[in-house]
Image (cartoon, rainbow, N blue to C red; front, side, top):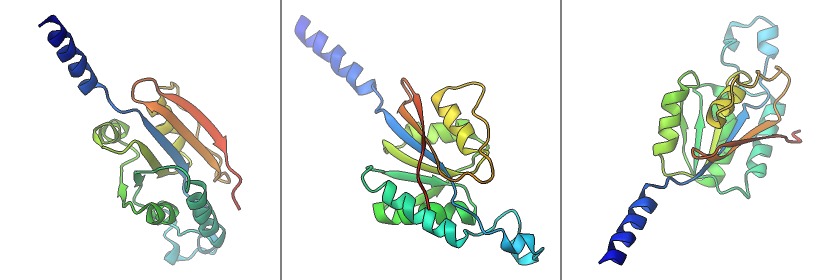
Amino acid sequence: MKKLFVLCLVLAGVAKVQAQKTLYFIRHADKDTSQQAAGSAFMLASNPPLSAKGKLQANYWKQYFDSIPLQAAYTTNFDRTIKTVEPTALSKNITALLYNAKDAEHFAETIVEGAANHILVVGHSNSSPVLASFFAGIQPPLPAMPETVFNSLYIVHNYPAKPRLEIRTVALP
């Protein structure tokens, strides 16, 4: 009887253990600012598309993540982030879901409650480092990336139990 009680306690403890997740935060690929510089109303300065170089970068991210078993992808609702995640999501047969970069707590709940353990998050120069910091428990948060930097990868390992942040610089075209 005592062994059965101990076994029940062990199984109850195992059921409460959350799967550890790995989150990959990147900034959208290079954006096309040519129309913006020319003053075109077509551009809609807040939502420019990817440049030709940015399209190459988005495809390179797909290659980079080929060997990583991504199970979920999240993007903000901007053309440049959606087009950055698109090649990777298609190659992994997953649908990129929208998230609000300004509501980190709600986004964290979504991540914890989700079944995916390897998650790609595409954001912006000012949101990707801040979100990576939030998920890694780092305060104050990392600073925004310079406007010309598109090759930073922030990896949060072992989320949510013992998160650890790794920062990589990836060679992009």
